[in-house]
Length: 235
Image (cartoon, rainbow, N blue to C red; front, side, top):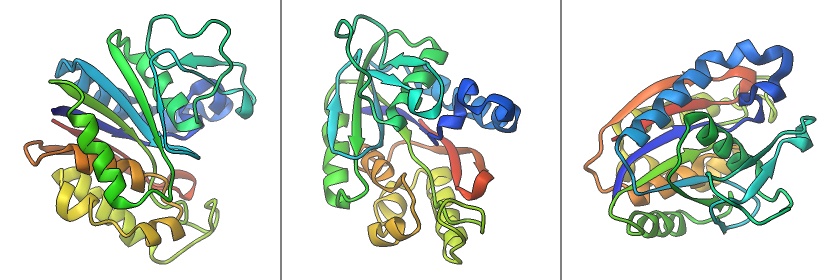
């Protein structure tokens, strides 16, 4: 059963070593992510699952390795504490590498798994994944990674799209209200793809895992660099 969830964005710039001279610009975002994740850990989950966007639909075991070398920093992370495969090459997609970094930062020592979901995964399959994750243990916590539209300004990765702001406003409301069925589950996957919203599939996994008992709290909402970032806690 899902007992708590943290929703965070996953730009590699969240990692100070990657951000370098721009580190301070995202201090508030890091603090919000830390707070959301701390609330999940305080709920004492037996299993914590990190869910984020990736090129494929894959499950990742505890100890899977990731790296920020593609972003110019020789920094490696593992998904959870404990031994991983000796000498394993970094394989985690960037979103889960950021999730692993957040977990290391939190000091979590419990059981961890990962799930990456591609942007083409249909909403109903995302929901099925969520229901399966929620049934994996008596007390399940989620760290859900992903971003809103990457088309919020002319300098955004996808340039400006007039639909982006309204789309992200709906996401913010759904996260604040813990609106799984009428909000996150109802997201238009086609529109999300057009607006380059990487969080659509992970959020719909969360919607499938939730059963309507949880309350939501929106801790952060902004669009630095023209990309919608949200931090929320459900418990």
